[in-house]
Image (cartoon, rainbow, N blue to C red; front, top):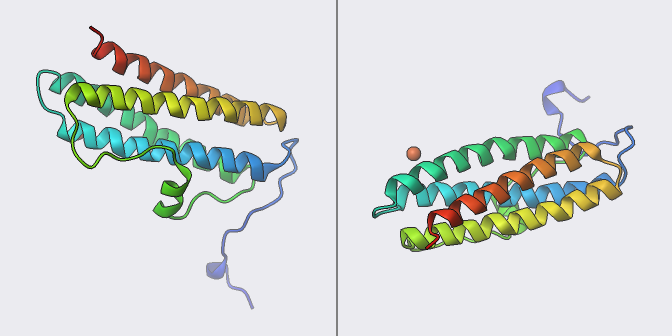
Length: 165
Ligand SMILES: [Fe+2]
């Protein structure tokens, strides 16, 4: 006999017009992993930045990691809404992300350049997801990914503007 407390989440079929939810979930998992890792990396730079740009970078990264933390929830919940499973482990997050950590704290200027490049990489991955979502009849994921691409492109611009000569 199965008890309510024994229920384990499993992928489910959904009956909207969305097609091939496994492929969409893989794309969403990739950008969720990127978002999560870039949230941590932005937070680490927020803590360790030093020099004349301290307040600028400390404050800019705070707004960015708060936005990304909230976005990670939206991306994961979209995976569930199309019937697939969200990541269950940090190992899965690391395995699916293109973002890499820095062991040593870079200079303030290097931090801006590194984060700007990371935001651009995530924006590229989001552009791929927008295309996949369009091909699989999923305007909701397309809209979510479009909004996220806009955020990362704006973040890259602001970080680059901070170190422009
Ligand atoms: Fe803080």
